[in-house]
Amino acid sequence: MSQLEIVNSALAELKKYPVKHDFETRPAIPGPFTNTVKLELPKATFRYVERKTSKQGSDSTGVTIRRIATSDVQNVDISSHSTVYQLKEQLSNSFHIPLANVKLLVEGKLLADTSVLDDVLVNTEVNDIQLVLVQ
Image (tube, rainbow, N blue to C red; front, side, top):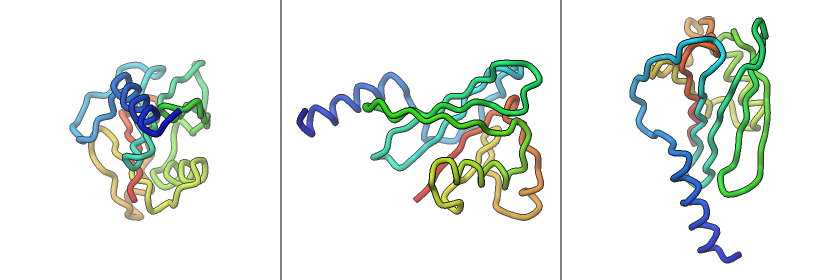
């Protein structure tokens, strides 16, 4: 497959799974069992994240990451209730990304990297969370 065909294939896949690059506030999805977490990576990478909880009372949430235009899939469980720092650290370790490059948006608001906000609990089952990776 030529590079042009690979790029065209990736673009076709991107149209199926649009990723928002503006950080507008969206209402939380009601109910503890449905939510979407988007992981935005540098433009050349094309990944998205979707997560679903499977049973009530679970203390973790399954996350599936697919690399668009390839068959790469990665799964990771994240705690349903974490501090901001714990969630960032777990995602950093899971995806082998520097911790400084992981930013969290909760309900459309960027959480700062301060010790005060690092103690804030994030309910990953209820809150609308975007995980943003920056270079």
